[in-house]
Image (tube, rainbow over all chains, first blue to last red; front, side, top):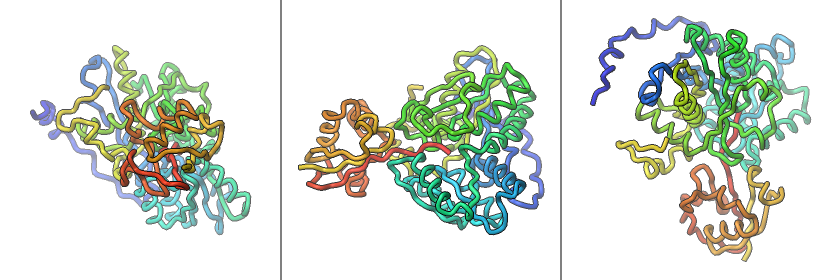
Length: 333
Length: 91
């Protein structure tokens, strides 16, 4: 049956005409906020859920924001100058962002990634002309961090390392952009901000901004429920190298998400909301829905870090039809 | 008959920190049981409640994903190298 709101949505004003821009860099940030409607059915009518669609950044993910800020600060401080190569470890999206921005600004980029990152990510990074150094997949992203440190020790003069896990400019990017955008887009009505933790930059920076605007806004992090998980891009803090920018005391709450629940939510988002996202967005949405169900009123904002096209070859979509009754969606969540 | 199993960081709490262990088994299913015998709790992390390999865990035999071999029935021979590879954590 057609959605009863369909006519209204089609008649609604389209987004205003896109602005003319000088550089791809100008496309970073100012991402749209989508109201989640169907999945939110059954929750209190006083509760609204919004998702910030970070896949609209030109590099395809939220990581464009911190990558740009770290590079800008590097140039400003003189640490990144002509002749230097940008080097960092990443699980993928930061790598794409650094490769893209490095190309625009004219700096070579080298990235250390576990060799089992998705094939799409590898190819995107190569397409931007960056060099990829693969680390042992069994050592995970912490292995990439350690290998990157070694490469830097061997030739410290050659590289500029943004160091996304320890560079305060990572969370600062979100303090300056993501936080204010979300506050503005909800006309200050936001009551809960929910985001997954990878480096923790998003939740730390945007969370800090929102708390300053209104200390009552709850800042809630989502993390994998176990050290062994399939949520590419998220980090289980208790068993990982803890990022220097992560300050747990600034969080109001942490919600664990299981890989299966997050995957199921990705399928629901595609089939019920018409938006295909990555697994970390599934985890964020799952946690957001859990919170929403306990509330009578509130404006919940979560972050969808990227779209789902980078994961089509990953386990997320391997054998998914067997697990989920497509066409007659029956989920336990 | 013995094969070598490479253990990823998140599972090393079961293997007393070892990144590689020896195990026995005619096929992958028997191997997982043998691992469980020596390192209790590890099977539950690799397989779900129905006994299937969890979707986000990849098992490789000499570099080949068992999903593209005979899955848990993939047979093993002396000296094979098995890797348990998880998905990638953040950043």
